[in-house]
Length: 371
Ligand code: SF4
Ligand code: SF4
Image (cartoon, rainbow, N blue to C red; front, side, top):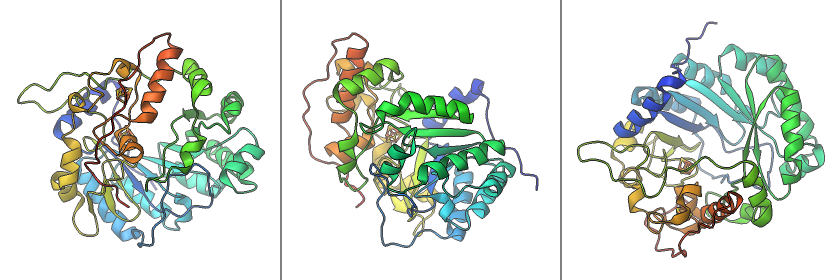
């Protein structure tokens, strides 16, 4: 079956698209979680499984239509493990008919040659496959599933053989940092890209167990020295001119501006990393939540210049603060994130700078967590 081309834009106009969608509050990118069920039990997972029923395929198809009408181009299906849904290909097909640029996130345990061929035939742009080590002992100890390393690599090979673009997603932790170089070599052998994320976050219900696995001190500094984060446009930006919408420099990040998240239970949030439930698609339309939810509008109103403690921070240019993380771990969406401060200090030192953030003063929580 022929599927229409995604409404992909060239790099040349991508920047303008980002700016204009932020200024007009168009949800350019959406992540939709298809399930919270998973066939791995990763030590660092932020997932929270609830007893509420997950969205049905019919409900997800309706939401996809609403996202398309709202202006979404970039759609990510994630979870949980998406290949546990027997209706996954129906949903991808629907998404492609709506001309979304589709990306999948999976552990690839259930990806065989036939599944990979279907992914390819449906024109999925990229599959992100989670990997936690360069060898079975490390990877399987983190997933807590014996044999998962071999099965994940088999899945990656099937996808690559089918011609699907693959990116290995490697969350960097104290327990797997030693295998980073070997993972990069493995990715090259597999014909895959690799994305390394050193920021392990607390669970979305605020439970901090995963944080113990986070890199800190000298290990973090060494990693950041080798892979400096992109310069942040965050704090100390100018206020927007009257009569104009916000620009990318004015807002802390894309959440609630041109990006959003729909959970497997139907909650609409500004971002998967910001568990602020703004409404549920079982009770009202996506558009009503995106345009009128009090919580969504509150997140959208945050400006870099108004962040407590961050707006005059010396280390801001080394900072990759995530407001969701500031909320979950420090209790304040409008304040500093202790984890980001630590990263900023390590980045500054790695770059030979003595810049430091101001002393942390965490204030009361202005928005409550979902759970
Ligand atoms: S380093 Fe800390 S205080 Fe400075 S901008 Fe980042 S989160 Fe805010
Ligand atoms: S900075 Fe955090 S809340 Fe903002 S888009 Fe990124 S992950 Fe989401």
